[in-house]
Image 1 (cartoon, helix red, strand yellow):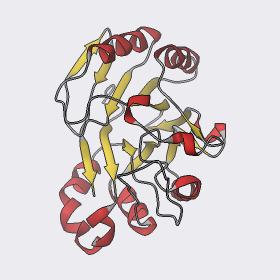
Image 2 (cartoon, helix red, strand yellow; image 1 turned 45 degrees about the horizontal axis):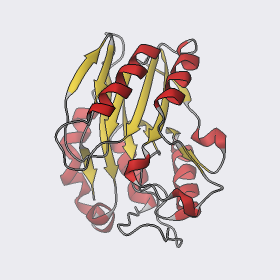
Image 3 (cartoon, helix red, strand yellow; image 1 turned 180 degrees about the vertical axis):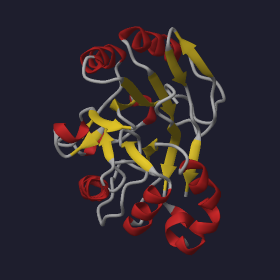
Image 4 (tube, rainbow, N blue to C red; image 1 turned 90 degrees about the vertical axis):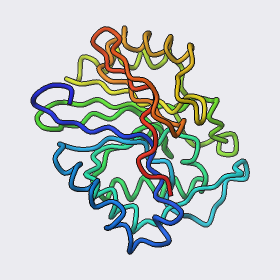
Length: 241
């Protein structure tokens, strides 16, 4: 938690695709222990990687993720998810329709989101109250993760740029008790972050972020404090169908 009054849980990638969607009857057994654990927190923030299924398919993607809407809604509720990042390299796998379906489901479930959208407002940072604290959350994906956005020039996806993020942190700082920055970045299957990630994290920490939460590598990577900022370079995968 960031302080004694709020018990926040953070996770890396959640993709409710594959077996998680096609064999949902086993999800209670698969994730029951996790459900109990996360129920003790005020809420979970994670990266939602698989869009809700749609007929559309992004032609720029070889690996393709899609999740069942009912399963997505059920598991996000069970896992006590309060907010998600949509800035990642799979959110556009099902194109415009998949992104729209995902956002509609999140809005219906009362789950906050940042990072991607049909409109700039949907991709913008979000501010919400959790356990009496004002939490600001902004999400970005690095170009190196190959989000294949070029097929959808009219959609909004926050591409990571340390200068832009630092400016965003400074503007959010006056509106929130806790500022959390989510970044989809890093080298797949590496257990360490790269020097450029440390440089970027330090810049964002100096701008006043409280937490930097990284994901994408599918591995757990080092944690450090940069000043008073908690930096999680890679939170791994929580669920990847």
